[in-house]
Amino acid sequence: MVYHMTVPTMMVNVDITNLHSNNLPDEMEYSIINNTTFNQLAKLQNRDDSLSLKGNEAAALEAGYSNSFSPKYIGASISLNVNDKSENIPFKKLKKYNVLNPPTAGITVVISDELFTKLSSGTTLVNMEVYELKNEENAKALTKEIKTLLPMEANFSSFDSDYARGMEATGLLIFIGGFLGLVFLGATGSIIYFKQLTEATLDKERYVILYKIGVNKKEVKKSISKQILFIFALPLLAGIAHSIVALTMLSKIMEMNLMIPVGMCIGVYVCIYIAYYFLTVRNYYKIIIK
Image 1 (tube, helix red, strand yellow):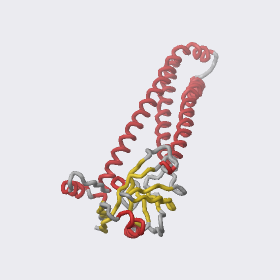
Image 2 (image 1 turned 180 degrees about the vertical axis):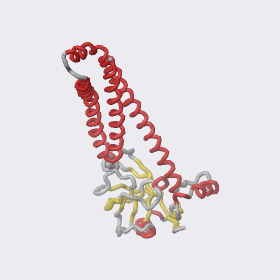
Image 3 (image 1 turned 45 degrees about the vertical axis):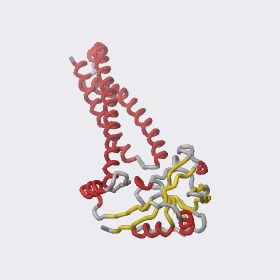
Image 4 (image 1 turned 90 degrees about the vertical axis):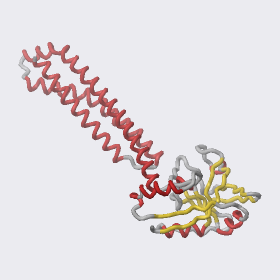
């Protein structure tokens, strides 16, 4: 074990209509911790970061922050209503990470020590037990054992379970996207392939005439290759251009660089199209020569 720390937390339902976001509900539950706790956890997690909040100042911790979908914290404020106490707190800082597990804590708000003491007096706090283990990616057996010991109402999350859940969801999306892409690509290539073979049967007489006036087989094959290249290249280039534009917009929305996976997918699709192209040229040529 690397460290263990008990984190006193207030779980508060907050009206977030002042955060200028139309993508979220009007109310959200936040995990509230104090400034000292944040600094201690940041140090234990080897983060070169700290906060010095005073009065009613607050900082938001959101690990999955997105400019497109997340609230606009800086410059906005929320009202914390705890028992009979109400305080308006302005956000001064935004951290795009969380010192607590997001599946358990969600979005965390850090407030000054004095304000936390004031709001938490007479309130039942939730004690979050934070552990960091060595080789946490291999803690599957330990995670299962801990789950059997916890009561049903306990809210538990671990690196192993979160990683496994993320891999399952991502793997499913990749499989569905890849499978559908290959199906449509195969269908498109097959349609072009059979259409060209049908046209080869209809165009055979024209090539016979060319052959009789002195055009040799090499020149015939060259002509066929150029003709079919245009037929295959046009939809391929249109599809690549469409994909690049759509995925560029998706990259901006998700704030992720998708160029490497997109480039790999385009490479695979181009290879499949090239295989269809050479297959079509070969069989087209055979029909003409016969």
